[in-house]
Image (cartoon, rainbow, N blue to C red; front, side, top):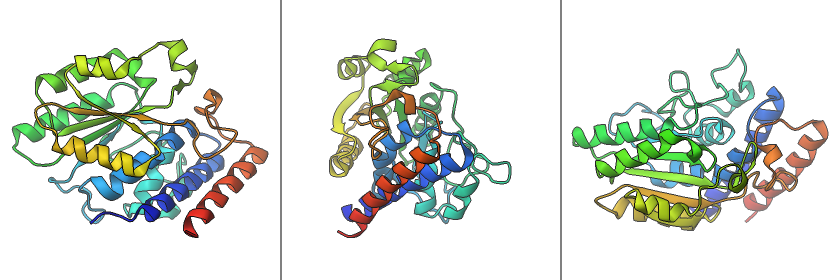
Length: 280
């Protein structure tokens, strides 16, 4: 049974607010790429993946790898709202008193299937998980989310080739195409377009979608599930810093915490957005 779109919008809006609070409270974290990915993660955890917060290590569960592992201000709020751990735990983000490290960590955070942070390595782990599923004749699916700056890493393309070689149609990768990375525009740092043609030439089924249109994102995941014989990549066009006016499309907000004034402005915008969605 699909989750009502209104509920998904509330979860994503609240997720951005929780992520902002997390980063501000510890004065560290990555908001830009977290906010661009929030809608995608919400759809994944609420409508796409077969997961059970009461049994997070179910061997038959679907797996998710946050290959851009620094974007935990998106992942952790979604996991908390989904019920993997209390939202109260988010207040101890990046604190020695808590269990939520700055990068995705599988040993201490329920719902995290792979520890990531060194860019380029997560998709390789996802390929291994999908290959293991094929070899064990399991029905679970594997999902991985990459940044469009991350794909400048050579290891990513080795993983893409391996996935195609082994015809891993139980693997779906999503590239968060927000066009920005820590050093500026991806087209200036290391151009990767045309991504669709490159991925097709590497033996992947390619889908393109607006990463903030939840219905379109969900439809893309459904198409990926139905496609057989090769892995699928979803190229999700997004806005870095989505939801906060002064953060949107600004590379400077890749990985820094807001000051008090910025925090109050951002929080007001996100509170207003959440109230609008809750009032629908």
